[in-house]
Length: 428
Image (cartoon, rainbow, N blue to C red; front, side):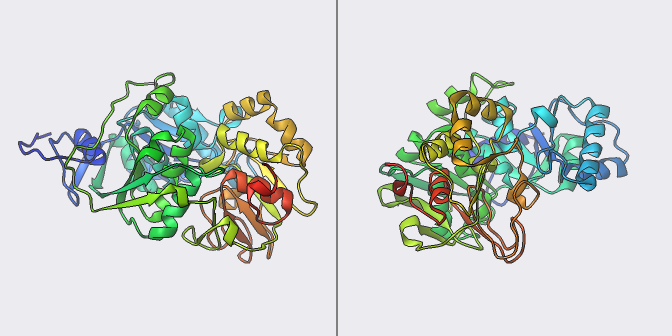
């Protein structure tokens, strides 16, 4: 590749893309071809990519260590069709000797599993045939969702083309109020800018509040960048990142940061002392309100889990709120630890005792109800509070059902009260 002689201050996103394109620098709007570090597919999207792979006569993936296949959406298989999907992926993984193939007892929700396993590291370019691939930006990687055909091309060539996105800087000042987490920050932000407010932009999250966030909260924030229409979300690596990554990374991380003088499409700043736990009302993630402003909304189901909020911090928060309480008589509470390691740690810490004594159902790791797959589908007119990332019409079941997005503390409190509730109503 040709190295250009010009040089300009760049954002972290531009730096990562320039390096992977073999360029000295890149400009927003520029079309580039970049090497990918990880190409990811799941049991819904990978079969299509595998079909395209075979249609063009490809025989071998570019690197069996860099193609990752995770059968997480409909596992354990709920029907013949889903079993067939998984069979296609399983046989391809066996044929190609894919190192990172996850199914059955080692499967986890992909966007929780890959960071936990150290498969994605800072400085990577990651594409996945799943829109929430942007989660990995929390590690300081450029990560974005693509279609199955693009995944097939990347599996063959190890490359993908991109239009370099403009970057928008989001600066979070102050301190977090009790029960407020990264999930609330991203819901509040989407409520402010709308579901197309960052269309094809890179959302760069900064400020003292971001620096104080755990990795679990950062992953939750970047996970939902796509819900603002963004191409990616990203947090510059710091001590929190290094502490998380360096004990698990499969490859050497590369740490990037935005240059002083880097150009942003815009900068938005938030005073976090004014942010309460948030609720996104049907049927868009932008329909956000403070939990205290929602009013009485009775519910039928609560789901705590998903690639947004199924991590150990989320399990801990839910258990803290539920401790000593029972789920309301007419509410179904489903708790889904996102990976086997999170499942095992939750069991070790006694969270499962709390969940079971409260009356919850504990599911094995799966995407399950988030996409209306299984393990908690909603019937006509039912309402659910969920720690998931989307609340579109029919997302979790019947088209007349409703999904309200919250953090795990609000979800747990709502399960106890039988209506959307502030955690202070249950745990003080």
